[in-house]
Image (cartoon, rainbow, N blue to C red; front, side, top):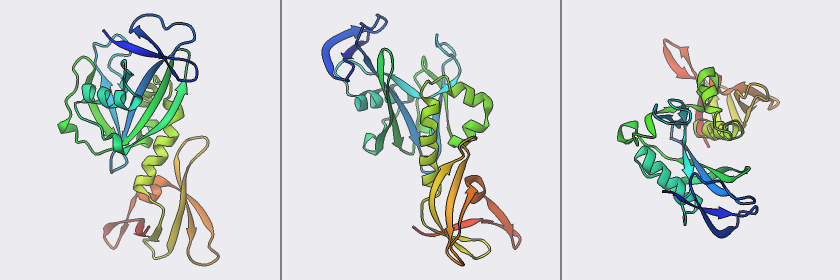
Length: 238
């Protein structure tokens, strides 16, 4: 039996509790958390729900659940991850990426920067059947996967932040040299307003110092030169 703390509309603990499955009282809220991860390659962690789940069985999702009585949001995030995925998240490397209040609950979505090999994870059988690390922009390019992820009410709101933070890992601001020799300074990252494709904003360090925009996928790719593959842009200094 799960017991939840109840909050008022200003997210203040009321001293009241409820049992999971009961109706949330009028004017009261409980606390929900979700955990997103980014590894050192900029990949995010997805989990596939067990086929035996009553709600949305077998779809790709993320770790999450309700806080138990006496838990903070961070403590609930750590417990849910450990229970479902079998590893302890490093909450020292976590930030609250997104918060919301809905009809009966408050939600905090955490982003945790951590490398965890899939081989070291141990899934909670009744909750999770599989997991994968994937680049955020690969999710939106896969219509089926994107459709599954949008079952999370917060996903479309959170995705732009997740994608940009992933790109910052792979394309830090700094000075780069193009494979043809010219040097550029990365000024920032952005998302296309219609497609959400990640873009690099950069300035030439020669001539009139023009500012350019290029799809991040092109920035990161390797090109053929002198019979071998070389990065299109090579980081020189940050």
